[in-house]
Image (cartoon, rainbow, N blue to C red; front, side, top):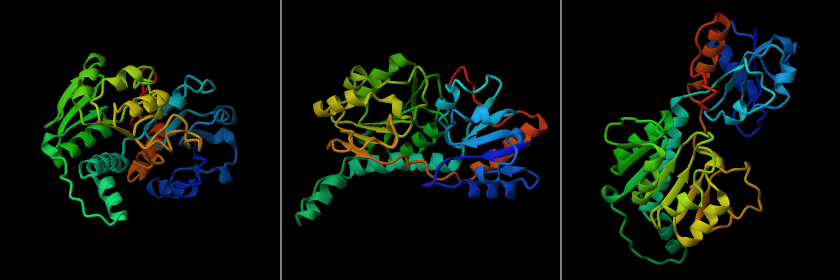
Length: 311
């Protein structure tokens, strides 16, 4: 039994570094990369950022796909993946902390009028403008899983009024928690900022369509660090032109990298970051090593995905 690390990435942590760290955590593990693949029939576990269509064909004895991150929708929907192959995701603290910080940073950027003051500096103008009072500000957090709950608590600690929303009922100290699709439009109308960290499921794809965007509070800010397919981007452009919402901060888009011709790049109401909110894996590789040990030993996996639910 062997574990193959194959991210296909050059602008993030590389396969060799991941393999080295996992060998350090689990010295007895047979960990391989594309450069040291050997016999593909040896591979029982595959750790990837995205599953290639050819992976199941190349790896006839594959038992587990370990996503190096949270979003697993493209793995679940891959028609070439045999039904018996299991899927696991990660729930590490480091990217959860990073995404929560990303939300706080861009909410505070708006609260403190940083764009306004930067423009004034370029004009050499001293123009005081009162910051928005945090206790009067309502921030919604859509998705109250591992990352969303951490984000909600951090925003609450800053001093904002935080309303959380999820598919099923949740409880978070200091956060007003709502659930169910019927509660969403009213929540959107109350929030000055809406922070989305939802998974990609049949229920969330295109959830922010023209109707849902129109339910947002005029001048509010929509921040998305979850999945790019949450938002109908054509409808978003129209909504921004109307001022509902007033601004969007997108760390994820429907197509990544975002094509250079996309109007999102040039719209004055849009801020783009290139999927960097949850950059660091931190201690997550320990879970990858542990899942390989558990798979080998026939034990229950960490963070196994329920394919029927999509997460």
